[in-house]
Amino acid sequence: MPGELLTTEEVAKRLKISVFFVRRKIREGALPAIKLGKEWRVREEDLDLFLARFSKSPLADTAKESQ
Image (cartoon, rainbow, N blue to C red; front, side, top):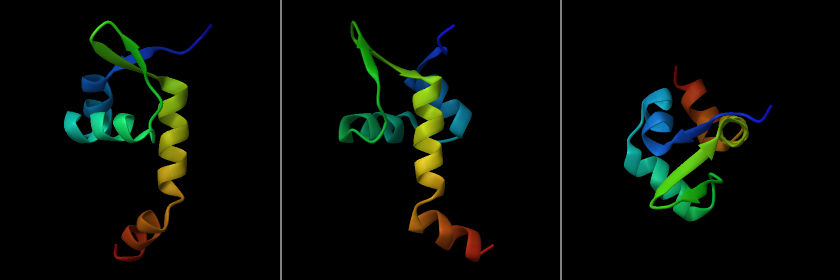
């Protein structure tokens, strides 16, 4: 069974970030999404992959070191 499709609002709420950031990442191509009508949807699997890539970025390493 395929994963759930999340709205940009649901993604933002899960990550505790703004909807604008989610939409920007979709627009940049960093977060794959599907456009259904006027709304964007993100597959849970794609969100997991996005988070895995982000957690391996040098920026994330710097944040971990400062804690």
